[in-house]
Image (cartoon, rainbow, N blue to C red; front, side):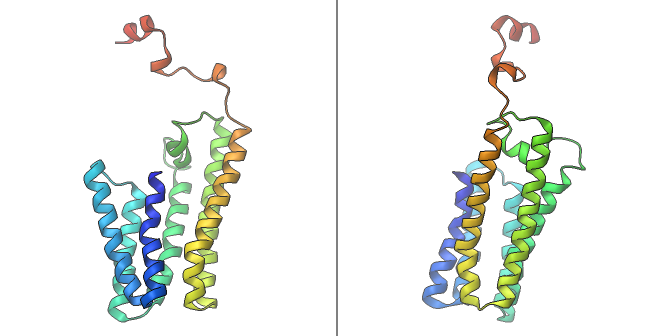
Amino acid sequence: MKQWLDYIPLVLFFAVFKLKGIFPATEVLIASSVCLYAWLWFSESRLEKRHHIVLAMTLVFGGMTLYFHDVTFLKWKASIIDWCIAAAFLSTHIIPGELAIQRMLGQAVQLPVPVWKRLNVAWAVFFASLGSVSLYVAFHMDTNTWVNFKVFGTFGLTFLFAVLQMLYISRHIVPEDQQLPSEHHLPSNERESKD
């Protein structure tokens, strides 16, 4: 549920764009992003790395769009964020520890390591491709088409990819009787002996 909150500034941006144009919409995008992430910070005492990236890019590229009165900067923002997310997924193949997708879904399902690796690469490729498609739409089509794609196309493609991922995961979930026991599944006498 929480990840859908990220779409609030985008929906507000879309609504104001349709009513008043790109520059008022950019102002609303910046203001609503600051409010959303400030609320998340105060309610959870932390922000995820992707929130830091999105907020920083929104402030920088949105601010440049308003300052120079040039939508080109805002059009670059979406692709750069997607590419940063792709790089973050790929970097966890190099940095020791859990893969990015495993940190996101590991509490919900247990999967074999090769499956986690394939999923992680798939998300990296998805975001890299999404960034490239977004950039193509931004600079080969009009601003109205780009905004429509940013709101509906990006959401639709992400939702479709997530559904396909869940179908793939469902084929590889480790059955409960084969899962490694976590501490809260241990018998009480074993938990006590660990303390």
